[in-house]
Length: 163
Image (cartoon, rainbow, N blue to C red; front, side, top):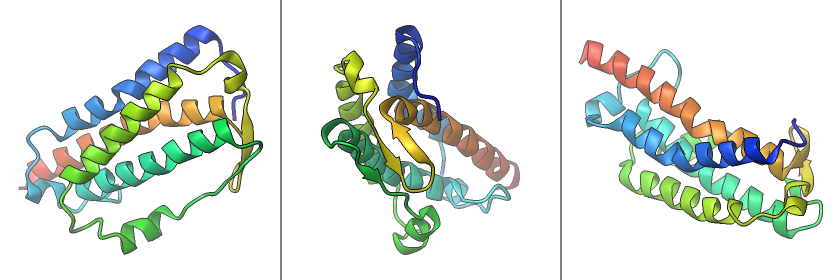
């Protein structure tokens, strides 16, 4: 993982993170339930991706807060497939998940905007990847929504070709 970045790169990552919810909403524009549930050779359906984004975002928001508040916290990995299987990703409506995703992004962006230089060096240990800093967290989650928006684009494009 990357330990440090310049202030300018950090600001660009924060802006990218902040836009993540909008990018996902744009990818979902006009999607029907049939399109959301269309089988996808890439893996999850679009509906499942949206639920993953909500759960991942809530998890990541707590990870950042723990890094900022606790001294050297252990940041636990979680089983994304178990979440998908046990939390009804295939059948729940997506509206509340999109709200949760957006709210977690907004509240976390408010925190990111207030961090001081020392905050960026705070670190813990991630159970799957080892050393885990606030900067590592930002690099991962700045890209996360965009990566899944691209996945949504692929899912919905495939569904629209076949529906």
